[in-house]
Image 1 (cartoon, one colour):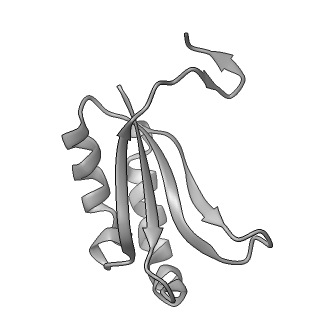
Image 2: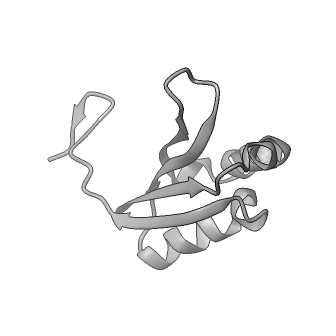
Length: 98
């Protein structure tokens, strides 16, 4: 069952995000089979990230929480807040799943 994980960076932590980014991207690659989609939330000019969205294909909230807890961004204490919500996949990449 899909879960949406939305993260919110701590204010003024952009430098930390950049320092840990390569490790974070490696983590995502290692867990790609669990990702329906994933990406940063950006400022309107695209220059600054302020958090992220993860759409996960896992069996439980606990698995979603465990995965985000292992993310290098979490381990580096980048996030001010993380919200995990069960999600219904209705449309993805133009395909209807209902």
